[in-house]
Image 1 (cartoon, helix red, strand yellow):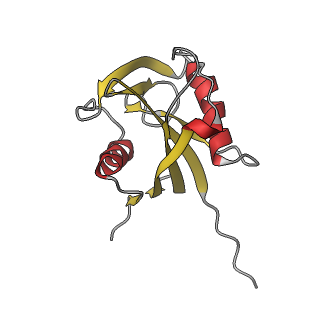
Image 2: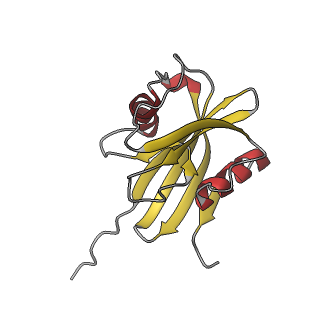
Length: 147
């Protein structure tokens, strides 16, 4: 009997940086890491390319329009969590149209810009690690594994 196919989840995380500050959102009412800060982010819905997912999430969460040419994958993270295994794509947003605003107040209780080197204490751990690795120039990392 054939072994069932392994399933992995995918997500995108967007780094909006302006004047040395990073845009972060505080999660609420999501059932995952509520009360903590993350980036504009979301799951891959399937049938969409990574940059397409990033463009969709930016518009849904902060009302921003993006062009794929202005997105750069800067880190890929293989992450293990209670919900399974994930491949997370972190993308730097090099240019955007519009001014970010909280377009999902039911899922985001706060939106703020933080210095890249001083993230809020309540930052989701794998997001904090990813930002640190990106600043170091690392392009691949893992999180949640006993290595």
